[in-house]
Amino acid sequence: MTTQTAKTIDGKTTALSVREDVAKRVTRLKEHGVSPGLTVVLVGEDPASQVYVRNKDKAATKAGFVVDTKKLAATTSQGDLLAVVKSLNADPAVHGILVQLPLPKGLDEGEVVRAISPAKDVDGLHPDNVAALVMGEEGLIPCTPAGCIELCDRYGIELEGKQAVVVGRSMLVGKPIAQLLLARNATVTIAHSRTQDLKAVCLGADVIVAAVGVAKLVQGDWVKPGAVVLDVGINRGDDGKLVGDVDFAAASDNASHITPVPGGVGPMTIAMLLSNTATAAARIAGVG
Image 1 (cartoon, rainbow, N blue to C red):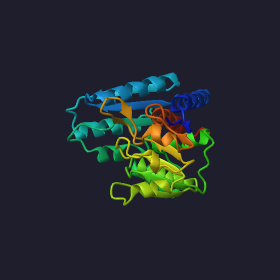
Image 2: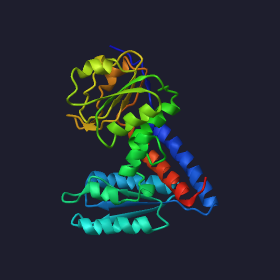
Image 3: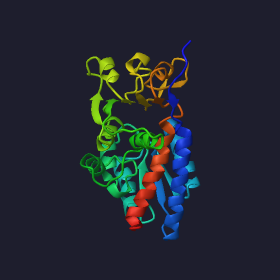
Image 4: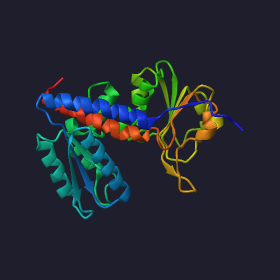
């Protein structure tokens, strides 16, 4: 029987700490007469989306934000949804806009994301924010990748000069986390479904970010001794339990640090959403 040697990165506790920091920032903003406002737009009745939105609302309210959720029917037209976004762009009391994805079939997610004011795009998905990330300019950063970097910072994990492998190339996680790692002076490889000998690629990594959506894809013998493993995957196992993209137990025998699923990267997403909203409010209001 093997013994886990890796240090488990506690996303729940870290996220709580981030949220406490955000609450202090909100208090300072209110002292300047700014009440940060977050509006979430929920279209349809997707059960998972409803849970996410409830959790976001609860966390944002606790941190001191003015929170509003606009619930729209699944039959809402593209034009009506865009009109809602346009009205929120123009509302000075709203500093952060989040349209919960995925949208019901028939709605163009790309057009909706592009309609959100980049200054209020707290998901960090607008093309202007994507470009800012690539160019190293000021913008709003996608929440889950930002959470990965925050975990590394708070656990004292050095990224500069390290070989990092990102497994997955999505616009939500894979591509932005690669840019953030580059910004920290890591050498980054993006691997994906067409990568040849993925095991060998991962074995060369000091840092592995698994974000591909395949349960336990990254095996223990894919992780070199001392590597850091950030598991962004959320999958439902055969037994109904949540599992990540990494075989946690096996990888823990080799890794120096590893995130569990659940309780690792996941809790950081909402925490960084709140951080983005506070940042957006401060920038819009011109408050340092």
